[in-house]
Image 1 (cartoon, rainbow, N blue to C red):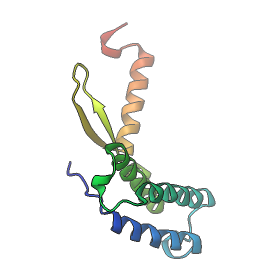
Image 2: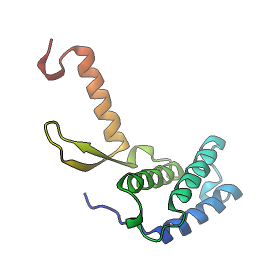
Image 3: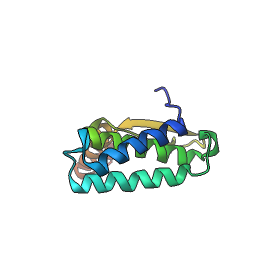
Length: 130
């Protein structure tokens, strides 16, 4: 999967526009529930605090870049009411390796994987153990 480059100035501009629409309850933000509206504003504040004083994404740690990416995806999904399509990225180590890789999946894929793991565990068939 191609990695999105984080343009901090574009993020700030976009989030300011979203903030204005959400607080004014206008346009595509008019039908958001009060809980969604509050969550969006809270997540925006978190992202903007993380970006405070930073000019480029290189000034963020890998964890911060993932956090910003995941939060922006959450905000976009909440606005578009498409939670299953938002991307979730995390750093994972393969078993038996010290190498860490970035793995991105949709929220729907994550949910399916969790449900499959839960089903296997309940059936007692994890890795063939009975």
